[in-house]
Image (cartoon, rainbow, N blue to C red; front, side):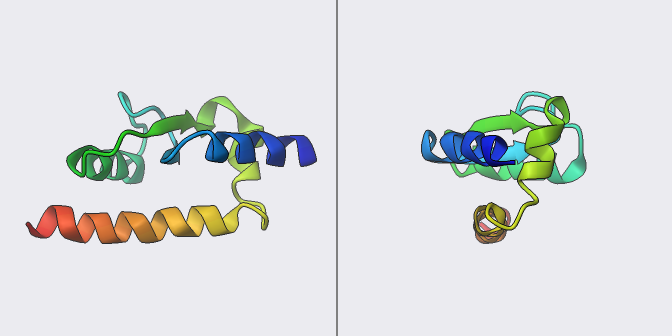
Length: 88
């Protein structure tokens, strides 16, 4: 849906770091989300959290092909930050 893509793009464009996650940064609702929140906090990143459990359209939308590069980039940044955070 084009409207959902535009909403997601607006969220991405409006923030330096965005975490589309299950739960919130104050109450992550899965282990992966909790780990990413911890990595971002330890790295000193100020980030916007988006709870995909509250919006099924956003949850599905971040799986779409036009958004995948952003999700993949986040995963790569997470891996690099995790290595720096947990090895120092």
